[in-house]
Length: 97
Image (tube, rainbow, N blue to C red):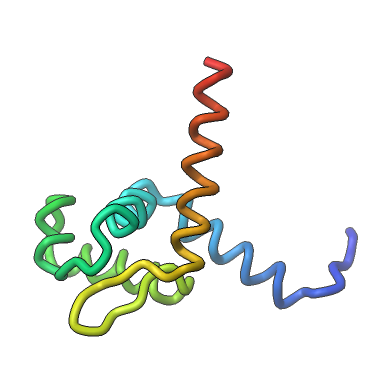
């Protein structure tokens, strides 16, 4: 097995990909990219989630540095870049169907 030079960066990438492999979290990131600065209730209602589910998914996104929370939830610059990458990937896949 190949040893990576920057093991910490590879572990972080793995965590981010696991976070974004969940369709609900992917949709939340897309939503926050479009409507930056959303309240918890707005996110919860948009995705028809109970409080516990919404908190769980938002915590995962915060832990991955894709979303930050102050009085509202905001997508980070890194989250915006990642959302764009996933949107581009989705378009590229659609071309093959």
